[in-house]
Image (cartoon, rainbow, N blue to C red; front, side, top):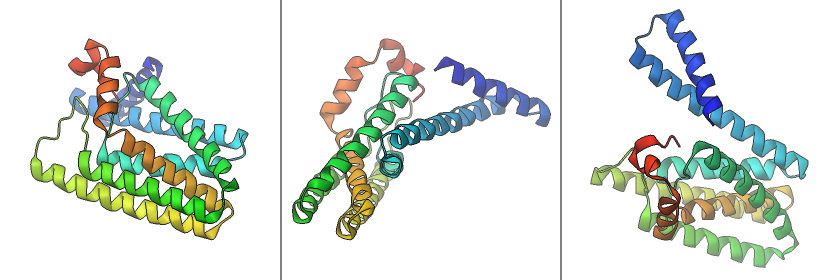
Length: 213
């Protein structure tokens, strides 16, 4: 995704010239623009795939829930921004499709499955969160414990919303299913197996601090 980095740097450069920013501040601004542009593209991609499949709300619900948890809990990282965006887009789309299929299940079975996935997810978060980025280590024990508590609290809230959607039925139920799957997906990204798998697939440059995502 070098082209997106180029766009971010050009935008930051123009703003920096207009506001007479020093180079260090321009670099920080470029990083912020890159994150903003990447998020916008991800929203567009997930929304478009969801719309083409008749499940835009479910896809965006999965993206929103997963992104919120990711902020607090971290998780396994892709080897490049492009791969990160592709995996995020396809996973949200897949969760939206799966949530639609789950509507064929009876309500008691749906609720039992959602509750089981939610409990497993909360347990994984309480055991392994936060998983920090290789380039942004979180070493303070108290801060790590605070992120873990917040992650568990957020996952519990999202799980409650998911189950409430299941009880409400209709489109709420399919959105609740997508949210439950997003919680489970992000919790799975915290497991030691997931972290080891992504580390093996990252090249030496990524491990030495060249990764952006």
